[in-house]
Length: 272
Image (cartoon, rainbow, N blue to C red):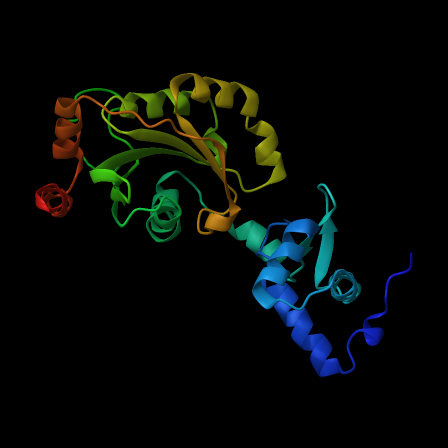
């Protein structure tokens, strides 16, 4: 079966450009999207998208160098930008763990929290707690997220205290799982988040050992290609939620949180 030429489906260049714009508006930046998923999204968002129109627009964008093809069932597409090399280099410009805290904390607050459906959420970089006593090695997380959720059919408010152990590309090993585990004793969830900017770094990331050990203890694992872009993050292992001992959770908040966050938690507790 031959593909239908785009000129047989759309009569003017303006119509073609309009459909190309619709198509590109649903292609995410820096990651691929499957043809099947994109077809469904276009039909849902813009209604009048036939199978022939999809392939005609897709192929026209590939021919013009705006899209490139990818793997996956049914194939996939990805945007091509001239700044790809610059972007990839930018994600490698984090020289140490400290430089990762702020961009990761920003994404946790702006995107990740919405993904987790918190109605209110605070994010704090706790690694810079100085000489504050935290009762032992590995008991201070790098980043802490404290959020509150409500559910339509479950009474009350539900407080989550989620910790993050951050590791740069040059410090990838299984010890990060154990550091996250130390936080989990007084948190509802704990994650290891690893910066993986290149394929070479991904090869060094011993996914099998790290993921198996994380699953054993209920620790979540996230790999982030670009710490500043949630769309490049991938949750490799889902963190298991627990209900920590109230005394430990209370002491953990008392030791780790700023006065402002403590005040906010008190407000949540008192709200009806």
